[in-house]
Image (cartoon, rainbow, N blue to C red; front, side, top):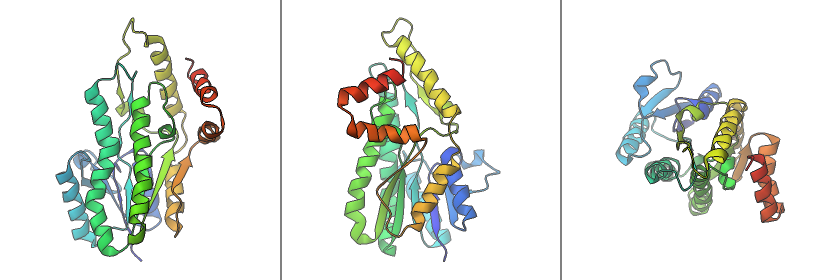
Length: 267
């Protein structure tokens, strides 16, 4: 039976890994990019889609439905990284991150849910982040944007259950992708009260990504979820320590956990 999948941000990184993995499992997969022409050799068919532009999203979904007649799975993966001290990060960059990482998936759902309602079935997997479970120093905006999507998914899941549309979150840890190259970095300001801590943390963040695991692990988890007729709500994919950090936040006193994070980041 044909199953059609749309993966936003499917031209590189985790999105591309997901798209390729599912295509190998005989799903009909479409990825998206703001500029598909930049990827003429993409093994995945890419649709032009900008998650900050509702018209662009509607057009891409219309094209997909015209070609395939159905849309069974949406994987909201498109996102942007951002680092910086909370005080010194430009508000325009904060808005851009929230517009991409939180409002973007909601816009895509505005276009996709009517299709799934009409079909009386659908699966939605929102790609969040382990960072969304805690306010990480110098990654606070990123944490907030992904945490917001985690919570919104819980609401969507309850509201759409009677429509036979199932929602889940997948929260990756650090994986070896190009996200660090495309991330917005607020500048390290000489003489700032945050200079030393931010510079050290920025180096640590990039090392974690460079040493990250294979994004195929995320793709494999998503395939596993899609095989489950009654999927769960929250899934985490990453190193043992990254996943265990969420457990520790639940069981440790707040200040103890905060001090543990500060020590980890050398603050």
